[in-house]
Picture (cartoon, rainbow, N blue to C red):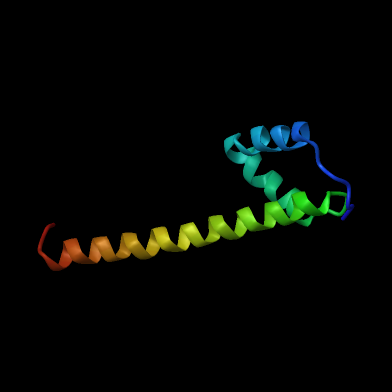
Length: 76
């Protein structure tokens, strides 16, 4: 990891790339675990990946609870 400071232009390009559906997700892994990436960008990418993992777990927990409630009430 390098300790170079990222400019506003660098952050803007980073955000645009992460907005591209599949490419952005892959780039988070590249930036998070790559060797020649500024430390701030690597830490940000790791934090976003952790956030995504938490959201996926919560999605399945709430989805299972909702489905369980529907099935228990005889909704289907």
